[in-house]
Image 1 (tube, helix red, strand yellow):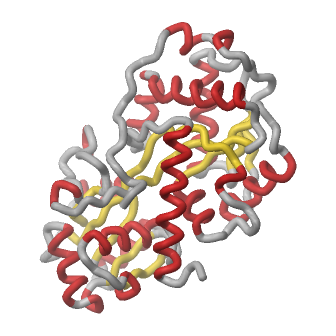
Image 2: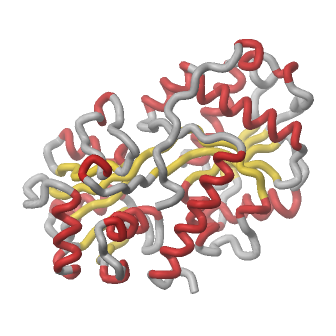
Length: 329
C-alpha cells in the first residue's frame, strides 16, 4: 500500500522565534477563519476549534479564529465554496480528514478534485483496528483473514460507515495484504455508528468489527471485545500500547483516519508557507500533545508537499479499491 507507510513521529521543536512570532513571515494574516464542513460537534468542527484556540494561545495569530460550520454533501458544499467563491482567500483554512480523501476518490464532490486546493498539514490520526467478540476463536488478524480467504461466507465484518466508506476500505486493504485477490467476496455490513456495530457483534450477528481504536477501548475495558490488530505503523502509547499492530503480525497494513487542513488553491505561496509552518508549530507544542492524548489521536506529522503527496496517494488507492468493488464506475 503506497500511501500508508510509516510516518515521522513527533518532530523536534522549531526555533522559538519561529514558534512565537508572525513577524518571521512575509505574509501576516488578517481576520482568520476555519471552515468546518459539517455541523457543530463533529470531528471537523473539533479540529477547527482546537487548532484555532491553540494557535491563539501560542500567539501564532493575533485574534480569535472564526469557525464557520458549512454542512452539506459530506464536505462537498464547503469544498465547492472554497473552489468557486474563495479561491484566493489567504486567511482561510478548512478542516479535512480521511473522509475528505475518500469522497474525493469516489467522485462524491461532483466536478471537484483534490488538485483544486492546497493541502497544508496533518495534526494527528485515529488509527483503525479490527476486533472480535471476547469469546471469539480468533486471536490474531492473520487467523481471521485466513478464514475469510478459505470461506468468505463465514465472516461478516461490520463498521460505522457506509459500504465503500473508510471502515469498509480498511478491511479490504487488510484482505489484499492477506492474499485475497477478489475483495468483492469480503462481506461487510454497514451500520449508523460503531456502537451499533459492536452490539451486533456481541449478539453474534456478525463476526468482526472494524472501526477506529478510540471507539474500541471502552468495550475492551468492559471485557466485551478483543482487538486483533491496530492498523498503525507501530504500537500506540499509553492505554493503547497493549494492542498489537497488524504489521507485527506480518500484515503491512496501516489505516489512519487522519485529521488536517487544506487551503484555497489560489492562496499565495507566502500565505501557504505561513499556514504550513503555523499548523506545524501547533503540532509540535506540548499543548497539542495533551489535546491529542485527551482525544485519542496519535502521531501523524506530515506538512506541505509531504502531506499533499500523502493525500494524492490516498485518493489514488481508494479510487482503485472503490472501482474494484463497484462504488466507482
